Amino acid sequence: MQRIVSGMRSTGRLHLGHYLGVIKNWVDLQNNNECYYFVADWHALTTKYDDTKNLRQDVVDVVIDWLASGIDPKKSTIYVQSLIPEIAELNIYLSMITPQNWVERDPTLKDMAKILRTKEANNSQISYGLMGYPVLMSADIMMLNADAIPVGIDQVAHIEITRDIVRRFNNIYKTDFFKEPKALLNNCSLICGLDGNKMSKSYNNDIKISDSDEITAKKIMTAITDRSRIRRDDPGHPEDCEVAFKYWKVFGNEEQVNIVKSECVNGQRGCADCKRQLAQLVNSCLKDIREKRKYYEAHLDEVHEIIQEGSNKTRIEAKKILTQVKNIIGMY
Ligand code: TRP
Ligand code: SF4
Image 1 (tube, rainbow, N blue to C red):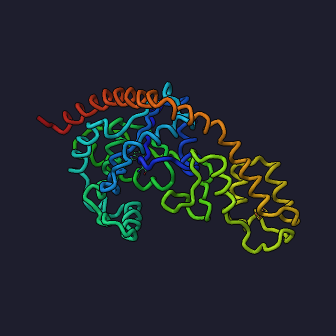
Image 2: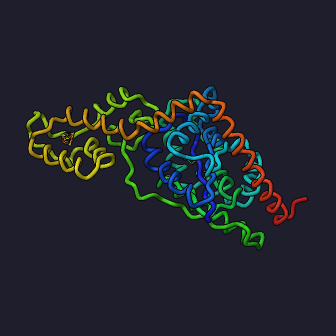
Image 3: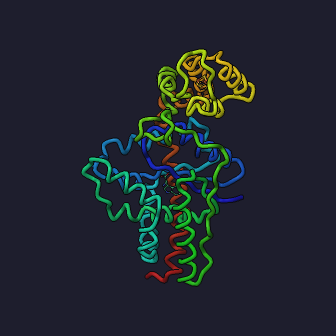
């Protein structure tokens, strides 16, 4: 049995990139592992400290999307980062031993900084807290002395820093207390956004788990297809169909994909019809999840209870580990 820890920032309602890229993997892992999944609301604050009106709702929305997607609170522990103050304390100890240039060269952070600078927001400054992003992530992971971290590819650089911090802690304090956690990547191909870029809320190219069938269909109709195609009976090129055909490959079975391909190549399939059909398929794949989501939206008490219970349980474990860490360092 491996101990699995992973989190997501509380960005509000999640999209299919989150579902296919990360959550599905979490769901698979929960049967044979001890899984802890948390909402990283402090990490959300690293960039949204001046825009906190939806912070609480964002946490709830993320948890509802997880539950709807099949994260089972009987198998996995669900918690909220800011309900575990021990993480903040561990973060202090880790920040003492982390060389400044380790966080400065973090490539993911450099990207985030670039995005921040292009925004015309008044928070384009990179805060001290944002610089500490990978250290806080390390505290999340080390707080439970995790074996493995299932994340999307964009988080791997962060996990590398965590491994470095683990080694450094163990070296400095002559211990083997912390395990070097490994990143677990899933093998499913990442779904792109409707415009062909990475799917992201901030690019406005996403399909949310919680979108209605109608909204989903409307969005899919905007998906990019084979740009060289003008008339309905022009032969198409599925491999150049930048978004729609890729979605078919993600959601359709082999037979469906083959039909689309041959009809497209032979000019027997118009892109509008093709996307209408695709929308139906996507909606049918999401049907159960969306129904479950409605259930939890109508039973918010249950959601809050799951969060509280999971956080209480996590805190007990975190306190144990923190006591040991303080002893190892030699605190009063
Ligand atoms: N940085 C992650 C993200 O943006 C969220 C996160 C915070 C996390 N702490 C973590 C993921 C610890 C894995 C382990 O999605
Ligand atoms: Fe893409 Fe379908 Fe149009 Fe072919 S028919 S180019 S697969 S949207």
